[in-house]
Image (cartoon, rainbow, N blue to C red; front, side, top):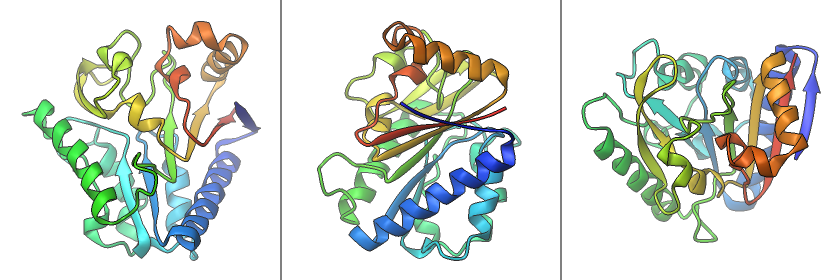
Length: 238
């Protein structure tokens, strides 16, 4: 577990943007493309804005996914896509078909989750992005709630038990209390790199608790079960 601490959000955001830039450029040099999964919430917004201003990221060779989404329309104030679009997607030159939005309007979450799982598989298969047969993401951004949830995987939910299902519909939970669609731990843990960004004393205290007794934490907090095939880096701002 690699933990890097920062005095403020700006320095953490800049570090996260630098990591994403380096990973994207290296992936394109090695495999001809890169894959990035975005998280929602307010914490990563500044990072996305910094990525939009970066001039050396080959966005035309990128595929962008989302770790989770609330079951609302894409222009809704609580939409993760809306935030990412405002901060990043609308400002970069990336082919629209390479932005893989979770289509979740709240009417058929189960079907929408299944559809996104198929889209993930098909994207990796037909674009030859999957060299190892495990749909790996080059980088996945995640956050953590004060209750230990990550993406839309909340403590005590059935999603913590997922073994084969890679994308799930989640019953109304969290704030705001809405239905959600989320990547599950089996899919998250296929990533080559995962960066979890947190800020504030309460979240840092929970991270310390996880760090002290990971085994106990894994029985309570979904975020403690994030164990990617590659590297896991925590970025924590005061």
